[in-house]
Length: 118
Image 1 (cartoon, rainbow, N blue to C red):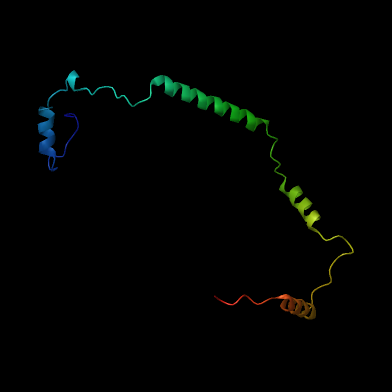
Image 2: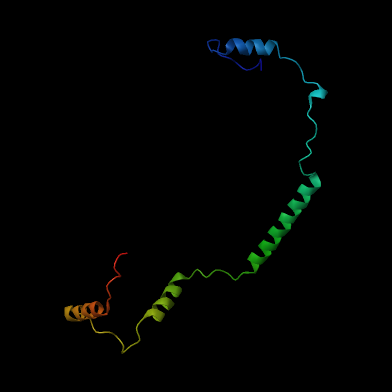
């Protein structure tokens, strides 16, 4: 840390100079914590990784077996338009104000009022 330049006007310059001259106590092997007992062993991680890799390979092979995606959107749209078109000879007459009013009147006749509030 002594090779890093420190601004002498910095509020921590004095602490940095002291820490570089007095590094502090070195750790001892006795201070290493014991191996945790609640961690899976490496073999369990290895088996899970190989399982995930096998599943990924299976998924990749299933995806490769899928048919190619049809990207011809114009043909799809033309087919949808032809299925949605009204057959020739069955073209409805253009709407008029009288037809609209007659339709609205028939809807009003069939309508039932909502039940009264409780």
